[in-house]
Amino acid sequence: MKMTLIYPSWPKLDRQTEFYLPPHGPVCFAATIPAEVELTFVDENLQTYDSDAPCDLLAHSVMLSFQLPRAFAIAKEYRAKGIPVIFGGIAVMLHSEEVALHADSVFLGEAEGRFTGVLEDFKAGRMKKLYDYMGEHPDMNLVGTARREILARELYNYRGVQMLDLVHASRGCRFDCFPCCTGFLGGKSFRPRPVDKVIAEMESIQNNRMFIVDNSLAQDKQWLIELFTAMAPLKKKWVSHPILDDDQVLKLAADAGAWYVYQAVFDTSDVIRNRIKRLKDHGIGVEGTILLGTDEQDEDSIKRLVDFLLEVELDVAEFTIMTPFPHSPVRTQLQREGRLLSSDWQNYSADKVVFQPKRMTPEKLQEMYYYAWDTFYANGGHALKMGNLFKNVIRREMEDGTYYRYNPRKSREFAKPQSGQ
Image (cartoon, rainbow, N blue to C red; front, side, top):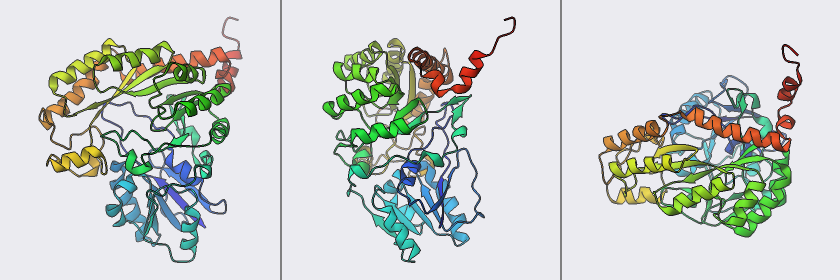
């Protein structure tokens, strides 16, 4: 059986440096596909697909809402050739009824222990229109090492720098933050993977730099202590979402190779100021994730927020416009208040205003989005500030002897005699 797995293309945020990380959802999903299935993977951001190539089943892995229009167009092309199409992924769970109009089958939920049955149905000619496993979470022991070998790894670099490999150590999130869909997607309970399985997967990654994509590394102190202690001997360097603000945990995270953290900055309070300082005191960089358009914000408060980011010397900032994705608490509120302006998913890119802000016009919020990017990066663009973070990690890798281990070509270059020697 020949199966094609496509990850549809999507544009970067307006003002953001264009680079692409290796996708995580498709490689995790690929680990659930039996070895006898001949799998071809295409990341349309960097590759082109051939709809004329032999294919028995097309699978779409869709993470973002604004990937959907492109996914629908690709599905139409394959279905016109008589090739059935199945959809899965985060965006599919959020938009399942609409997706069903463009698919032969829709898979909702996590695939471990389930997708083999879907393929058996397909081979028997009885594939269902819907496989709904939402809320029925698999045993975390079933989550295996992602199949990164399906990736064209050489494509995932920016100006010669290898992009981070993505890995996850847990699923679910108990915090249920108002703009987030995680509670709906992965449940409101913390579901950790066994630490030994996480470490085994990290050891298998042929890259010294990783992005731990868990929704939060602030949910269970004892588990974090165990995880970071086990990670330290690997000498990997890694990025993550917020880490528990605790002295013991932060020290262990730094010792385990924490490089920088995506930290939500939602106000100018001493709580946020001290959290950023404590991360930096442990040698951990900070990329602020800054949400614009909350009900508390007006034009002046956004300007003060940007000033605050410069004052605390945030390493990097990523500004987004609050976006009411389906099944998020904020969408429920905005629907109730009649403040939704659009459900065109192509505009749900986190850089466009699709709702009526409370304290300014939509046009003013869009203007303030550009103001925030342009003011924060006035003395050096996003690429330059990211370059400074990479300089820091390269220095740390050279200090602990891992830089040339993972960059053998650099080692050879270093050993070459220079002119005049």
